[in-house]
Amino acid sequence: MSIRIFSLSTLAIAAMSGLTAFPVRSQSAGHRENGWYRIIDGQRDSIAPRPVVTVKDFAELRLGKDFFGNDVITGQVCKHKLKAWADSTEQLMGKRLGFVFNDTVITAPRVNMRLESGAFQISNPHNHDMLSLYESLMKEKKDSTDALLKAKSDIRAKH
Image (cartoon, rainbow, N blue to C red):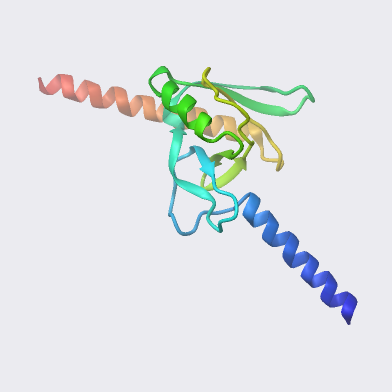
């Protein structure tokens, strides 16, 4: 009986620590835009309410491989968000910055320094399908660019 209680309590602790580190869903905040968010350790909903940058703020995305041969997505923040990215990463030194896709934290590395270049990498610690993720992000980026161009065209047509 005591072994069974010990096993159940061990499983409960392991499950709770997993939720703290990488929440699967963000229930209290509703849907969040896909992008990079501060991850607040020790909270049930650990994804900050506002993004640092979103997919529409990406200048480029590439699917590649890391040093171990694993698929990764590398990208660059657009010029108009570069200062906000650098300032945010400086404020987050020692804390985690998570990439959120469909309200799920895909990766949440700890920030070690101010990232002025605007470069980032989305790695795959939880066996996500990186090709599908890349294709979804490229489609989202294209759709946001198309919507922006259409809005500008509509404004020009009115004047």
